[in-house]
Length: 433
Ligand code: UGA
Image (cartoon, protein in one colour):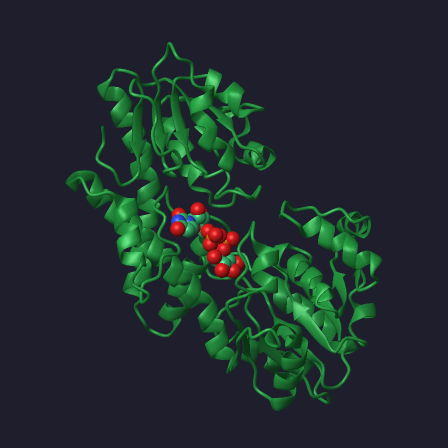
């Protein structure tokens, strides 16, 4: 099929490239001409394992191209995906649809009959219906429909998640849109991957509900970790013990410094607003948001209070890991931001190292902290170490520690099973030494 993807951010670029890999002919469109030139040269502006190779492969196979001309790429497309940003509105916290609406307005005059337009961006429940009405006003004589096809990709694992998803969800009104979507995903459904077709409102709700459920699972296990720390329970055993119940499942039960990223914080907040608009109180989702916010402050306070007890605060603290999780350079809503800001506010000096996130971190912290260029250099800066992201190389921490020194390590990702007898090892969900 011939597809046009509007927006070459994370979702647009990964989806467009993977659709090309599935055999479709894809043009990804973005207003930003410099970005398009970079992509045409096979360079990818985001860090995502495997993406650059796949972009180059599909450009060479002539299945993937990039353009900054929206109008040129609308009339020939059988399906058009909208993958532009839906950032939270700075004042209301609601998903801001101005970019989505702008592309709808821009593409409307160029559409041919029966084109299916699909929202891939995460959009409030009711958006497909609202955009369909908007288009009907803009192009009254054409048969046009907006369908919903939420994505469930994780950063750092996006290509695997696209090519082998647990399920594909499509929300549409007409049989025509249903057929187009079935054809589009045929290379995946033929491998047995389930395609769930619902109405657009259900599909839009599924996206938010999935993220809110996973966020709740994380906050739940983090609260159980707090309990274990007081009772001598071990959180990894507790997570395993409940996760082996297939009704609960073992995934997303890793206790840590709280969830971050561009999705869970934004989507849980947006979901509560959507519910409020319908006079529904999502008490569990609200509690999850509050629990996660509090968690980051609590973990910073734990460092400060522990060090104060040993008269070791304020001090220099080595922070290993800044991104919201491993395998990404993304700092958006990373728990490290709140934790570091709380530590700095109390007078700590921070020397931080992250394998991929330093440039993005500089935009947030500026010169309020120091950036080390290697893990080794960061560890040299202090005997107090906080691990905030689960980058695999941090598992080798022990090999960087000096024999004649003792260290205090706040292992907020439970990366290291055991340190040396002379070190203090503060793990999440284990009684404090
Ligand atoms: C999340 C969802 O997992 C994707 O399915 C979804 O498509 C995406 O949001 C989106 O809406 O676009 P992502 O934000 O890339 O993906 O990251 P996750 O791997 O889900 O991690 C989110 C946060 O939860 C991270 O801060 C991570 O460290 C934390 N987490 C995750 C835990 O603390 N414990 C866990 O067991 C799992």
